[in-house]
Length: 140
Ligand SMILES: [Fe+2]
Image (cartoon, rainbow, N blue to C red; front, side, top):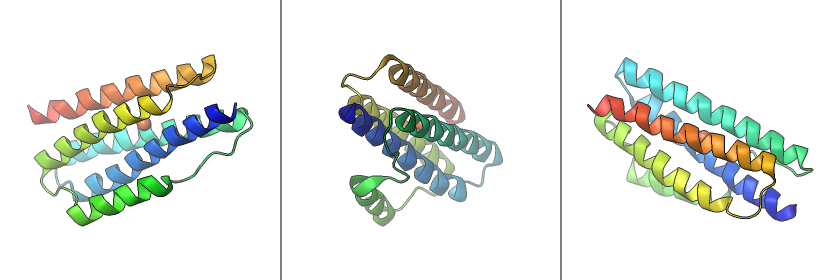
């Protein structure tokens, strides 16, 4: 049970990383159609965070409410490198984040999750795939 809560909390930190990254992308986007989709995606990640936190609590654990130590280090690195300013680069950055983040998050929950947690995680990861497809439409 403890291991499961740990894994779900690591997964939850991934969601917070996404929420924060989209905040930068949204602020930097001039294109209104792109901005709308970025907002929709950020809202989805917020919902994901709510669902995962609720599940952790239902399992008797305490849900984290931010990105954690590793995450905040990575965010500082991203800040120094600078977030993309051009719409095209923003979309590419968001796609890379969804792909890389989803990959990392899938690895975090490799252990034995109970059936309910597993199905929550699966549906979230499937939505991340949909985000990638939504973002790719703006590259055409
Ligand atoms: Fe998410």
